Image (cartoon, rainbow, N blue to C red):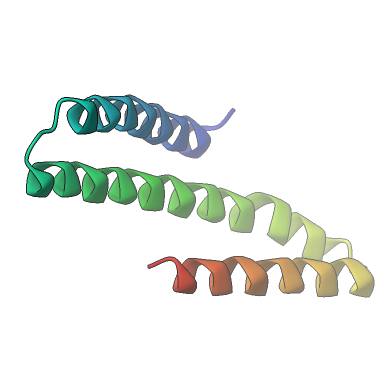
Length: 92
């Protein structure tokens, strides 16, 4: 596992811990704005992790796929990337 994926994993573990705290906050009837702030913080961690994973994919899998000169693979990689970008735009 390279350092980019390690950083993404750390962000995801922090998000998981934060989600557990948010659920407890809801159970404890904590003030809604405080809960919303924590949810936004988790979204930030998830976005950070997604960016790191995407960065790693582009630097390794994507670029390696293009080095093969396989046109079918290139089209597949481009299509996957477009799908991910579209999903990211819809979830902002």
